Amino acid sequence: MKVVYHEKYRTVYSSDPASALGRMESIYKEVQGCFEFVKPEPASEEDLRLVHGESHINSIKRHGLLFEVAMLAVGGAIKASELAMQGTPAFGLIRPPGHHASQHSCWGFCFFNNVAISIEKLRRANKIAKALIVDIDLHYGDGTANIFSGTSQVTYLHVEGRNREMYLNDLTRCLTTQKDCDVVAVSAGFDRHEEDWGGLLKTEDYRTIGRMIKEFSEEVCQGRRYGVLEGGYNHAVLGKNVKSLLEGMA
Image 1 (cartoon, rainbow, N blue to C red):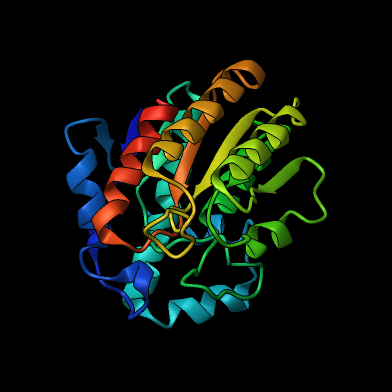
Image 2 (tube, rainbow, N blue to C red; image 1 turned 120 degrees about the horizontal axis):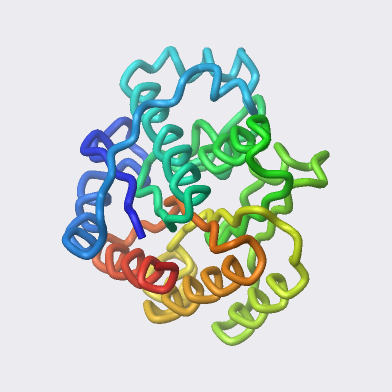
């Protein structure tokens, strides 16, 4: 497992909870020394155009610092996807998050759709034919779903469940129905934790989720798997939850 990270992800680029001071530091503190870190390069505007319209790109470009960090976040997701295709599981410890960013709009602390761009880049390069995106965030990734709504080659799954058991059972059920993909990407939000907004999952559940993704990828797509950070806002537990997921996916 390699962690894609850049110190610029610590930059406070807005006033929203995803950009809060200390959020990235809380994760870095937990995972440093446990996994190999690699640095990404910023994405290009050509990468952004794979899924986003020109007017949307320009609307973010007006905010210089935000645009700089968001381009680096997309680059981090792309780097994680490249590592996965080389046979190394990876996690993009990036921000801003992305799963609420559609082709021409965004909301929910998101600006560009990191996961969607990374998957579409692999598709356009003919490195994959089909992909599975598993979203474990508390919130439905409407941006990701919208981007791939007319694309049968990319399946988007948002995991639901009213309690821990139902949630993990739903993930199991979803994965058993997916037997044809070349890579699995995880939109890894941690705001469903019992001490975060969702109030549902325990820290050890993320290790279970990671292990399920690992086993699925080894069975279906030669172990090609990666994740990128989406939500998760309680700094006291966020780092432990991320580490737990990575231990399962490794």
